[in-house]
Image (cartoon, rainbow, N blue to C red; front, side):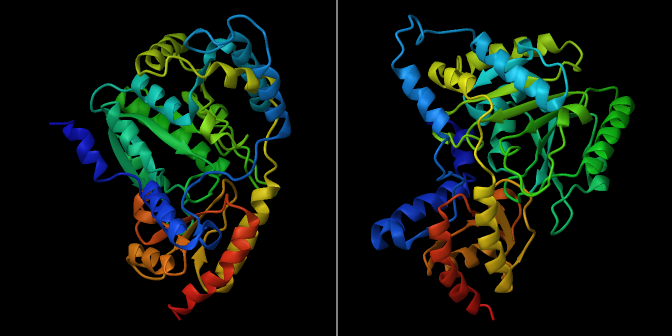
Length: 393
């Protein structure tokens, strides 16, 4: 009666949202203050004051036509502001004609894949991965190819990556800093990957594109630097959003950047603008574009998340749990003390702790914790983690 493809996808739907809904039930039973919800990457940090001030200023504007349609790619002035910012950060010459404003990174990746893929072409993703990639790829009639990373460190396994590339490979999604691990891929690994991609393109006579999913690039800790994908891979399309860097996940605003090094890149841009319209997004929200233009250099202070990471990570390690210390984003990917991590998640719920099973990211045996919740909640959760750990001693 309904879409068989969609109904089948529901069976694999997001563990993240499932745990979030479980949290809502527990909050009703025990009160919000007594639930330690590490399930959803939904920042509790407020947007910078400049962003709120810009919203207030724009809302009072008497400018005519500011709520009308604009180009499918967005306002030229906003695209230029984004292009100028990227040109400075990347030390590359990026034109506004290579920018498309989109309704968040999710829309950007869907638009990009729809613009790249022919039926049954393959897209490589690295495990563990953001679960929705599978659906984004299949929606564009592509085939996801899942490649294991190195055990425990979750860094790129270059041998497995090489073997995964076939004559049907069209794109590789790279997410660094990574959700769910917080890993930042090293420049040396990425340079070796670029060499492998060039060799495979020559071997098969194909074009392989990098889709760089970049919402966490502004959230890195210490002296960690995020390598610029567009400077390493010739055929890069980067997709970014302000959901994390400006703490605006509900506003759905981001952008696509098409590398000027891609041959015939303006034809690709035309395809992106077409798909932005015909997938139903039409254009990014007008007011949010104006805000981004005014606040182009604003960002959340990553120290806020670094302090939360250290508080949670240090306590978990002291209890005997195993976890790779993340260099960015706001996630911990912890090894489950029992093979079936779903059982561990259920045990954690007895102490009002909400975690997400690793199988939701293609990696059973682990759990994800989102520490983008208040420092106070994290502090209050620590005794519950101690009690949870005692079950496994």
